[in-house]
Image (tube, rainbow, N blue to C red; front, top):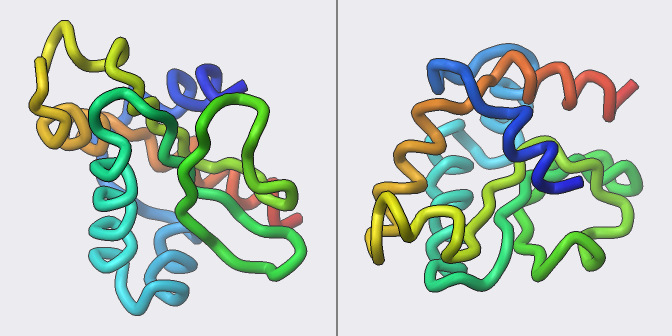
Length: 124
């Protein structure tokens, strides 16, 4: 499932918008603060050890960045909105050990219309 979310969320111009952007800004104090935390979470996994996932927690009605070891062990109440594959196989061929450059490329190609649609479906 995470691979489908990963690839399905790509193809955009990386320009965040929609209700999910506003919700992230509210939850984290600013959109930039959310993005910085998402990037830190992803970088903590650099070296090939998991996924960085933005989820909507239906129980607490809140947004959270999580790391997931694999497809089986995610946040139980979390509806994933963004999934970033941080396993080494996803970026090593193009970026070597420069995981930060891979994260930059991912964020620059994220389709926020898709992310916003996932968010609106999760809160409905």
